[in-house]
Picture 1 (cartoon, rainbow, N blue to C red):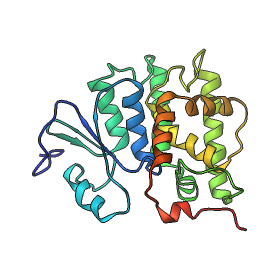
Picture 2: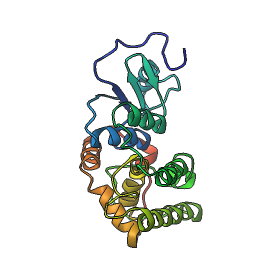
Picture 3: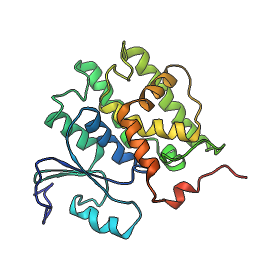
Picture 4: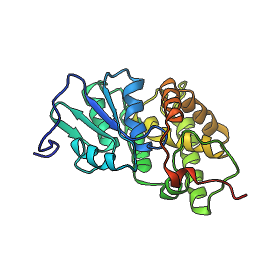
Length: 233
């Protein structure tokens, strides 16, 4: 049956969220942040990326062989947005999306744009919680992605944010989807202005994101290709 592994690990009382390195795994951050922010109790299994052990262990939880993956009893899920949607129905009572129908539709389309787009940004500015700006620069395609994200943030904040700090006021799934972008912008020294800068700061100051980044910075594993991105001497 879809979603149930041939030999699943023994069910636990708490759901199990399987993630990669907190320093590097942007996709893992998204559901982890949502669950942690809303106080959902879960067991965390961290698998080090780019290791032989990862390839062996991840298949216990994810038929796709990727993280993140969620196991809730016998049910397996292996996509970040799908996990967030499930968590919203299972534990959050719908709080992951705005209550208003129109805002909910806009939040979903923004989350979907992040989920499927911005390839140049992902490729040239991979997430690295340990990173500090050093003059490294990216090409025009990545800058177009950066410009689009900032325009989207500013538009949604002005039109939908109200008195809250996040894109639709309160923190939700759409903000979790953009949280790795905040880490990227901060680590690579991306210039952000106006409403987008205010929103960026709100994400960076979120307690759950601060917790994730601190844990990522303390990790000892390295992904060489990501760590090698530096400004030319």
